[in-house]
Image (cartoon, rainbow, N blue to C red; front, side, top):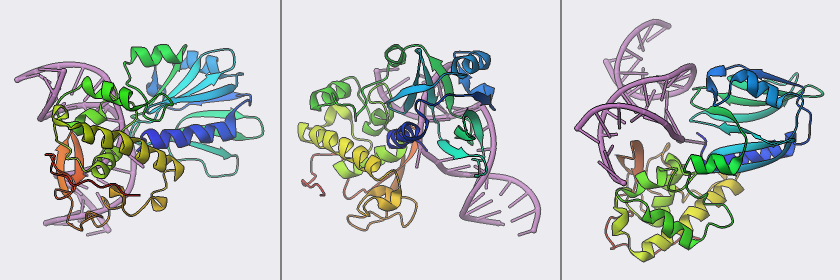
Length: 273
DNA sequence: AATTCCTCCTGATAGC
DNA sequence: TGCTATCAGGAGGAAT
């Protein structure tokens, strides 16, 4: 589930609940999710410390520790970050649990166990080594940065949007949404994009991600004019009412409107809102 | 370099 | 009701 907007919501949740509180104990319930360090080392790095600040790059959440280093969480397909107290219902698939004084807990929940838990010494180094592309909601993400990212890739547009080395943070749902709002076909070749299309794509990328964050990723609060309100319900284009087309792009199920999302430059200009 | 396929894991749902 | 097949908001690796 978690794409950039979800992870941003998790980050804010961590900020609102768990900063500057002593981690009194740590439970690693799924040691196989721990990467790069041993579960034992991770536990030692966390116990007795506190989180000083958080950062996010794409779908990666970093909780920076007092005394250096950071806990890295990647949420895979089904990850969630929950905060709860003793007596409240705990999430069902807790893989990592941090305990704070007074019976408060921060839990990494992940049904399918595709998530990752790690300790990183330096956030910048991690991002560089991973070759992650720029984060579309970071302050420096301007049109030129976007153009630069696109230049590194060729081939199908949606597959490129999903590539975390081109841009970090876009997943299957938001890729479809961005393409829909940009009026671009998922399989259009990057090298065939007109400059006007590149600019629309840039604007829509930021718009979609910002609005999703602002809505707290509650789909009910997003406009019905958005594709993602329809892909699991009536499967009709909110713009023209046609049934949505379905294809595979970048190895993922893709919904789009074959009337409103074209490969050529024949699109008539439009932007909602 | 791009594309396709497979794999990791668990659960919900559709179809028979 | 019970069974099986399919699918799922991620991503890394292998083969072509």
